Length: 186
Ligand SMILES: O=P(O)(O)OC[C@H]1O[C@](O)(CO)[C@@H](O)[C@@H]1O
Image 1 (cartoon, rainbow, N blue to C red):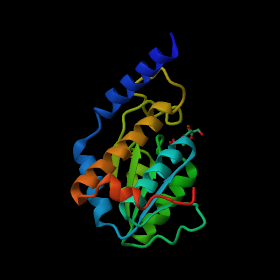
Image 2 (cartoon, rainbow, N blue to C red):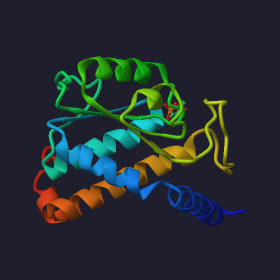
Image 3 (cartoon, protein in one colour):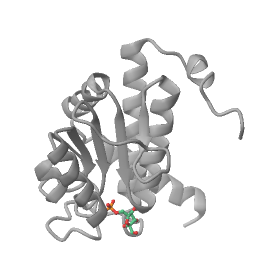
Image 4 (cartoon, helix red, strand yellow):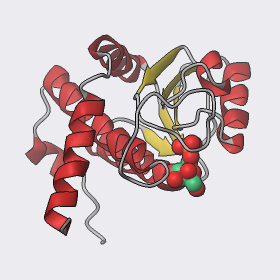
């Protein structure tokens, strides 16, 4: 199979998987973001890259958004929203952060393959992306031609971009307006 054919397989997997995500849960996450004072996102490895890209777009929209672990990230407060992106729902550092967020009394959302995992059980909202996971043995509903957590990581990125489009619609914010907040010291 050539690279273009592989790309077609990948985009097909992404479309199939994201087509199974609950639109109601997407709407709930959108509303949680709109209701939050500050928004903190966290994720490890490649999942973390999707989370970071999401925080960047939230910033472009004018939200006070932070990536956990960065030097300028302030403390989480009860009025804030913590979003943990984790396919397995059980990555150690993210479980610890979620437990801390619960103690603080912040709202907690997760985007995950495993809503029944340690993070999902604590979260106020667990958005399920039904991709395969190499880490969590509790379930493996689907198969993918791709290695490890690639399908989840891709879906998380696009799911977060879908949330951004819905927020743009609800807030009436244009791409041009967002671009005015883009870093100009790159
Ligand atoms: O999404 P999870 O299960 O929290 O895993 C985080 C990261 O760990 C890996 O599975 C392996 O490092 C990455 O592929 C993934 O992005």
